Amino acid sequence: MKRVVLAVALIVSALGLKAQNCDAIVLPYFRGDVARMEEYKSLAPEKFEIRCSYARDMVDVADAVPQGALVFNISELTDLLTGNRLPESFVVDIDVFSFYQYNFIHFLSQLPKHTEGVICFSTPSSPHPYLLVYSNPHMKAEASVKSNQ
Image 1: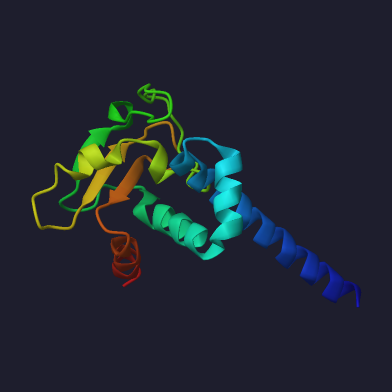
Image 2: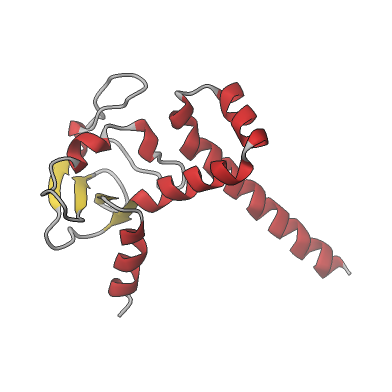
């Protein structure tokens, strides 16, 4: 019985952690307005989950630059909420890093027209030295499959 209770507690805490990460990932979409985000979550929880999944699927970290990726320095990114550029020493925490918070669209627009690609940002202070941004959220799954083959 104690094992069942412990297992349920672990699952519940994992689900709570996932929701916490989604909040951090999606909050910049609402320009940091927690009340507006909470209202949106209560009125359209499925849409909130879609926004979270989209943001998660747009970014990843890597130890190497994927073939054909455009490469930039992390200090070239601008925080859309503050207007400040990220410092060279910025450390990416992929669990709470938000696609919505930075000017990725500017960089993605530099990809050749009608192509899908990856934008890569050098993050030398992070555990994985590259932040990947996909032009299409489905590319992350495809890249994962290719790397496991």
